[in-house]
Image 1: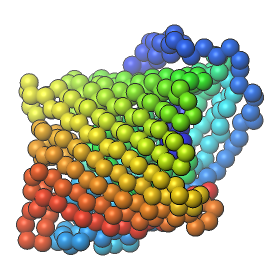
Image 2 (image 1 turned 45 degrees about the horizontal axis):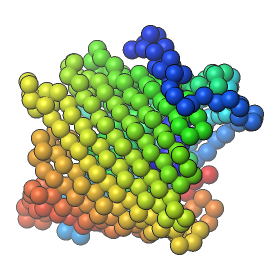
Image 3 (image 1 turned 60 degrees about the horizontal axis):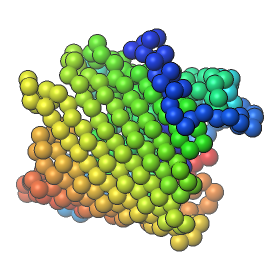
Length: 377
């Protein structure tokens, strides 16, 4: 993935031990020469994002259909303010932590995990969230076998929630990001990073759950291949029971490829998901999505990004409707100064079913425009 996704890569006792053994046994990951020692750092960073969004057909509800964080029409709002406090663990043997505190009108109320700042019974959330909170131990094994225990953002997908150390090239999030993959996990994550390949395994409560809603645990894994500085390939998987009081498994498979030839970035993100009993007893549900990205950087201050996407929800288990969705988004970006970015977002969504709200009934498409300003330090 892009550099801004590094933070993503960065069942109990026996399961954790098996994960660690599997990581150590992975081929091609032995490091004969240790990394040069770095000084662990205690840092405080921040991120602020605000926006204005407008939908051209002016829906009576004031909502944009099937949007994740840019769901409000014709309003200015603070999307998120984030404060990150951490102690880094660059060397084998280091111990540290990370805590991301967020508040705002867009990201926290949507991404909040059940059981923390989202009521597990009513589903209601607050405008505040503990987006990440974990302790880390970089065990003295090879280059360092890192253990993270707590709540962390998902490893799935090309796009990220948001943050000072990484944000997306488009302001609006993809359908894939919103409906095909989770946002966060709570549990144990183990990572080993080699020169050309990295592996990660996790045992967690599930999708977007701080407190588990069933007796099972979910397993996640990632294999990252970086054969050159210009190409990265991510193979991701999540599997386990996710519905309340159910043992039915949900499996999500994800492939992300990124190529960076010069000032151009090309990326592809594919997800296939299947859940047992999602439509009722003996009736499985499936979904799949494909998103493609093209970013051109004509200069150090200007970026132009085009995203095209297809989302297939034949059983209606992810979007609530049996439909095929498509969208195209264009985002121009201007870096005004150090840490300050201003960008636009022009987007068109279309479904093969009448699922979008119109002035006088349902319709098959919607068009929106947005302006976004963000600052990071």
